[in-house]
Image (cartoon, rainbow, N blue to C red):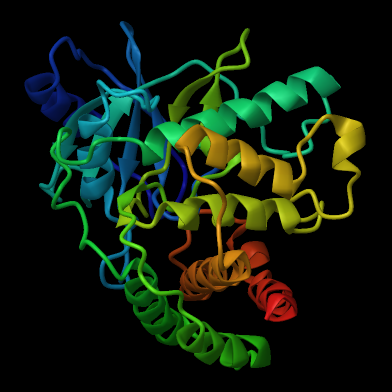
Length: 339
């Protein structure tokens, strides 16, 4: 391993995992995946099998960020549900092993679609991919949280108020410049909070195409990944977050579908995608949709501001971190158009 700041002793790791994961046998080699802005992720190779390791990054971290223990818990809980997840093997809170908390999970041989326009697929395949994503989202929001042991995974009720408070604080903690659109957006969101309708579900927090592993030969999701931001919350937050990304320009490090002719590509419009979700969830429609979208832009901007701050401090886990940080102002501007 050569990534400065992320090196660890593979022999020590192998000795530890041999004691804690049934069937694990060293020696092991570790290679860092290129993706993953928040928690560095590694491919572990042994002679018998492959595994994936996710760890907290080194350095000073924002409070409550990089919660790999929460990722491990939720993936373990979802193992026998309709939500596709990788099998979680072991969580290690002993920082002396590799320098920070980590967990090890199943390695899934699948494919990730980084471009939401799906340029290498046919129109019919694009339609199926988006339907499959919609199915997984509805399955996630239909999980019986008490039955899978997640009734205490988050605070019930007032989700958007709590999220606004949390991400406003996180944004202020990582703020590097004054952005006029963010200054206008935060009080607008506070003033336009919809009344709490009592809906509570497990929410992913970063539900988007490139956080899914698809089968190599079928248009089927094998695993929804990157659960760090998951909690108990309002299901419309996940739906609006995905629709927000699809509104973003088709360029940069996190392209959306903005400016593309979706109908000609076999990709549903935002209205069609929301209607599919409502049908699967058995609801008639969604009020206050602009609030949920504007909230999603704000929350994502606050998250990326944290990425930018870590990059400036030298603690980011990707060379794309500064590019992502540059998206904060454009995201705030798109939210301003909604309000």
